[in-house]
Length: 477
Image 1 (cartoon, rainbow, N blue to C red):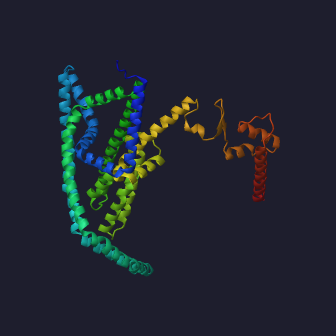
Image 2: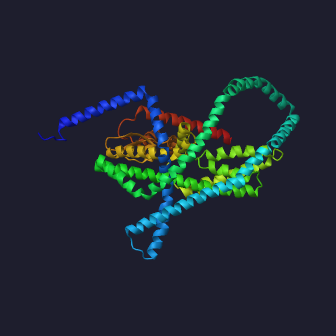
Image 3: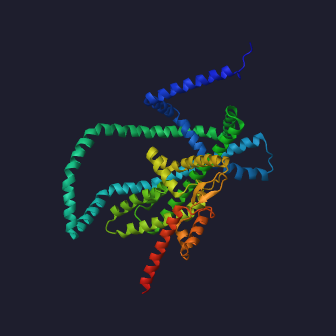
């Protein structure tokens, strides 16, 4: 007997097997979730170099594409080198070589700037820390001497919380010295492990960049093999949209942050701000975080400037005003020019995404939370719009603001804002005209009986109008 895979009993058996397997997996996740998470973390740690390679290759792909298609291909066309497998291989080899050289040049520039500017600044802060604390203490003493009431309040607060602080220090800090040493040791080991994974991942990323089209083709091949053609097209289009959103936002935000860091360094150098390079680096790095980044970078910088030179508090004010102007320039001119409307989110949803993903995943979540939520938001919007289109209902959100109901034929009953109704009725004194006008505005049948709610609303409006007129007459008198 010939076996047929499209036999209904075979399909039932496969369905039953999948249901049982899914039930077992669900049970395991519910009652053994910690063990499952531990196994997943172990697998991720093993594959961390591969994860680094994929992230690095993804971020370097736009650079490689620009070098290959915008620079090298036109040069080959001018030299009349015909398209062939050998030419494509050479273009890819040279493009990857230039991309790697450019990447390490930028890395070398950053490290050299840190060694020449930032590291000496940090060492200077450490060496002069006692002096800064002394100046800050003198400023505090002078402030308390000039304001004795404030000094008495601060002394009471210190007396109140000093015992609690001492107890917390003895119970929490001193008792956990061994744990602190262990944490520091693991952190040092983690740093070395990070660099090792990065080096291995970067080497793997070169192979990923060399065969990126082949990997993309294999992924599409698997998608069309597992899904129906229409569903596969939808999945591929969604991945294209996700890629466009992510790469547009991340690359644009990195470029925007570099420009802001450079402008901040120029401005702080002109203002003679202490540790201009360190402050500018901090402002540029934190600017990668949308919305909250400028505040995260500006507040510690202001504190540092004040502690270094408390005798000149105007330096903090000048720096704060400069950062405010710089962020206004970034938010209204530079940012929209570079990023455009790459996410399609309003300000509220941007703050929501940063808060949600920042709380779940920390700083990394605050950086990538906006493009991730933009993809989720776009998917939900497409899903809702598809359902509305099947029902022959408009998909524009603005059309739903002032409606009370949608009729079976698709007509919308509109709600007229109160200020528009009052403006239209203010010059009318006849109750019949008010009834007819109000019913027309609300889409009611003007030939039938006047509803009770319309009568009550008109009577209330007339009373309000008469009260307004009487008050106006009194004011005129």
